[in-house]
Length: 119
Image (cartoon, rainbow, N blue to C red; front, side):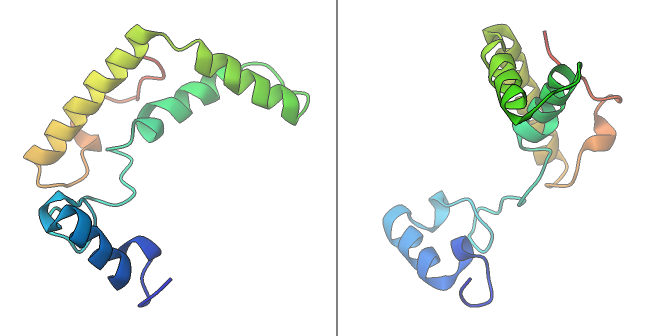
Protein backbone atom coordinates (compact mmCIF):
# COMPACT_ATOMS: atom_id res chain seq x y z
CA UNK A 1 0.00 0.00 0.00
CA UNK A 2 1.05 3.51 -0.73
CA UNK A 3 -0.78 6.76 -0.04
CA UNK A 4 -3.12 4.70 2.16
CA UNK A 5 -4.64 3.08 -0.95
CA UNK A 6 -4.41 -0.34 -2.58
CA UNK A 7 -1.35 -0.63 -4.88
CA UNK A 8 -3.22 -0.37 -8.19
CA UNK A 9 -4.71 3.04 -7.38
CA UNK A 10 -1.77 4.62 -5.53
CA UNK A 11 -0.36 7.76 -7.15
CA UNK A 12 2.78 6.30 -8.84
CA UNK A 13 0.93 3.42 -10.59
CA UNK A 14 -1.81 5.85 -11.66
CA UNK A 15 0.78 8.16 -13.19
CA UNK A 16 2.49 5.28 -14.99
CA UNK A 17 -0.79 3.92 -16.36
CA UNK A 18 -1.85 7.39 -17.48
CA UNK A 19 1.50 7.94 -19.20
CA UNK A 20 1.26 4.68 -21.18
CA UNK A 21 -2.47 4.41 -21.85
CA UNK A 22 -4.04 7.82 -21.33
CA UNK A 23 -6.63 8.68 -18.71
CA UNK A 24 -9.64 7.64 -20.82
CA UNK A 25 -8.38 4.10 -21.54
CA UNK A 26 -7.97 3.04 -17.89
CA UNK A 27 -10.83 1.36 -16.08
CA UNK A 28 -10.23 1.82 -12.37
CA UNK A 29 -11.30 3.92 -9.44
CA UNK A 30 -10.09 7.52 -9.53
CA UNK A 31 -9.92 7.58 -13.33
CA UNK A 32 -12.46 9.02 -15.73
CA UNK A 33 -13.85 5.56 -16.61
CA UNK A 34 -15.13 4.29 -13.28
CA UNK A 35 -15.62 0.56 -12.78
CA UNK A 36 -17.41 -0.88 -9.77
CA UNK A 37 -14.73 -2.77 -7.80
CA UNK A 38 -15.34 -6.37 -6.75
CA UNK A 39 -18.77 -6.47 -8.36
CA UNK A 40 -20.10 -10.01 -8.58
CA UNK A 41 -22.56 -8.72 -11.19
CA UNK A 42 -19.66 -8.21 -13.58
CA UNK A 43 -17.59 -11.32 -12.94
CA UNK A 44 -18.65 -14.58 -14.65
CA UNK A 45 -16.55 -16.53 -12.16
CA UNK A 46 -18.65 -15.10 -9.33
CA UNK A 47 -22.07 -15.24 -10.94
CA UNK A 48 -21.66 -18.63 -12.61
CA UNK A 49 -18.42 -20.64 -12.43
CA UNK A 50 -17.94 -21.01 -8.66
CA UNK A 51 -21.56 -21.99 -8.07
CA UNK A 52 -21.48 -24.45 -10.97
CA UNK A 53 -18.24 -26.05 -9.74
CA UNK A 54 -19.52 -26.26 -6.19
CA UNK A 55 -22.61 -28.11 -7.40
CA UNK A 56 -20.75 -30.65 -9.54
CA UNK A 57 -17.56 -31.09 -7.50
CA UNK A 58 -19.18 -31.59 -4.10
CA UNK A 59 -21.90 -33.97 -5.37
CA UNK A 60 -20.07 -36.88 -3.72
CA UNK A 61 -17.82 -36.92 -0.64
CA UNK A 62 -14.20 -35.94 -1.24
CA UNK A 63 -11.46 -37.99 0.43
CA UNK A 64 -8.52 -35.56 0.23
CA UNK A 65 -7.08 -32.41 -1.33
CA UNK A 66 -5.67 -34.25 -4.35
CA UNK A 67 -9.12 -35.64 -5.18
CA UNK A 68 -10.64 -32.17 -4.81
CA UNK A 69 -8.08 -30.69 -7.21
CA UNK A 70 -8.63 -33.53 -9.70
CA UNK A 71 -12.41 -33.08 -9.63
CA UNK A 72 -12.13 -29.34 -10.15
CA UNK A 73 -9.76 -29.83 -13.11
CA UNK A 74 -11.99 -32.57 -14.57
CA UNK A 75 -15.13 -30.46 -14.40
CA UNK A 76 -13.38 -27.37 -15.77
CA UNK A 77 -12.25 -29.40 -18.80
CA UNK A 78 -15.79 -30.73 -19.31
CA UNK A 79 -17.38 -27.29 -19.71
CA UNK A 80 -18.62 -27.15 -23.29
CA UNK A 81 -18.24 -24.38 -25.83
CA UNK A 82 -22.02 -23.99 -25.84
CA UNK A 83 -22.05 -23.50 -22.07
CA UNK A 84 -19.31 -20.87 -22.27
CA UNK A 85 -21.18 -19.09 -25.07
CA UNK A 86 -24.27 -19.00 -22.90
CA UNK A 87 -22.28 -17.62 -19.95
CA UNK A 88 -20.85 -14.85 -22.15
CA UNK A 89 -24.33 -13.98 -23.44
CA UNK A 90 -25.58 -13.82 -19.86
CA UNK A 91 -22.61 -11.59 -18.94
CA UNK A 92 -23.51 -9.25 -21.81
CA UNK A 93 -27.05 -9.01 -20.43
CA UNK A 94 -25.65 -8.17 -17.00
CA UNK A 95 -23.39 -5.47 -18.46
CA UNK A 96 -26.35 -3.95 -20.29
CA UNK A 97 -28.52 -3.96 -17.14
CA UNK A 98 -25.74 -2.36 -15.10
CA UNK A 99 -25.30 0.34 -17.74
CA UNK A 100 -29.02 1.03 -17.85
CA UNK A 101 -29.15 1.32 -14.06
CA UNK A 102 -26.25 3.68 -13.52
CA UNK A 103 -23.83 1.05 -12.21
CA UNK A 104 -26.13 -0.10 -9.42
CA UNK A 105 -26.52 -3.73 -8.39
CA UNK A 106 -28.88 -5.68 -10.60
CA UNK A 107 -29.83 -8.80 -8.64
CA UNK A 108 -33.45 -7.67 -8.43
CA UNK A 109 -33.64 -7.66 -12.26
CA UNK A 110 -32.49 -11.25 -12.62
CA UNK A 111 -34.59 -14.35 -12.15
CA UNK A 112 -34.15 -16.23 -8.88
CA UNK A 113 -32.87 -18.80 -8.07
CA UNK A 114 -29.63 -18.33 -9.96
CA UNK A 115 -28.96 -21.05 -12.56
CA UNK A 116 -26.07 -23.39 -11.79
CA UNK A 117 -25.38 -24.18 -15.44
CA UNK A 118 -26.23 -22.86 -18.86
CA UNK A 119 -26.43 -25.93 -21.04
